[in-house]
Length: 143
Ligand SMILES: Cc1cc2nc3c(=O)[nH]c(=O)nc-3n(C[C@H](O)[C@H](O)[C@H](O)COP(=O)(O)OP(=O)(O)OC[C@H]3O[C@@H](n4cnc5c(N)ncnc54)[C@H](O)[C@@H]3O)c2cc1C
Image (tube, rainbow, N blue to C red; front, side, top):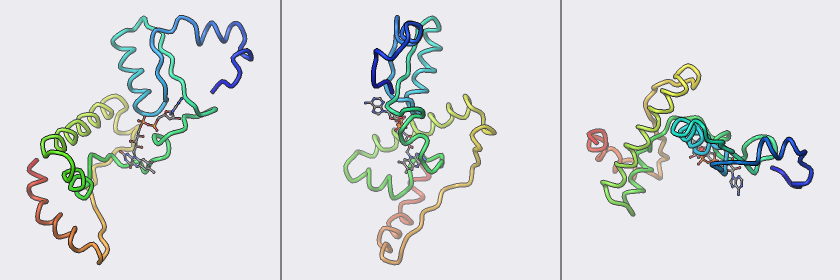
C-alpha cells in the first residue's frame, strides 16, 4: 500500500509502476494465481500485483482454516435452495479441478496436502438436516 506517491523514488516508480501491461488488484490466492497464469500466457508482460495490505496481503487466503474444500453437504444443500443442481455440481467440479491445478503447481508436500475425507458435526437440534444429509449422501457421492 502506497499512501503517498511522491514518496516513491524515481527508480521505484520506474521499476514497479511504469509500463505495466497487467494490473492485478489483490494478492490473495486468486490474484497470485491469475498473475502466474498471465505470466505463462504472456511471458514478456510486466505484471503488477497490488494489495491494500501494508506489508502482507490482507484477505482470506492467509487467514483461512486450510482445508482443501470443494463444498460440504450442508453447504451444497443450502446452495441447491437457490441454484440449479447443474450449476451447483458444475461449481463443485470447478473447485475440484482448481484444487488439482494447485496441487500440480505447488506440490502436495509444500501444501501439506492430506486426503482425510470430509466430516460435518451436527448438534442434537440439527437432527432434521442431518437426516436430510444422510438421505442424499449416496446421490451426492454419485455426482
Ligand atoms: C475464516 C475463513 C476460513 C476459511 N477456510 C477455508 C478453508 O478451510 N478451505 C478453503 O478452501 N477456503 C476457506 N476459506 C475461503 C478462502 O480463504 C477464500 O475463498 C479465498 O482465500 C479467497 O481468495 P481470494 O484471492 O479471492 O480473496 P482474498 O484472499 O481475500 O484476497 C483478496 C485480496 O485483495 C485485497 N484487496 C481487496 N480490496 C482491495 C483494494 N481495493 N485494493 C487493493 N487490494 C485489495 C485484499 O487485501 C486481499 O489480500 C475461508 C475463509 C475464511 C474467511
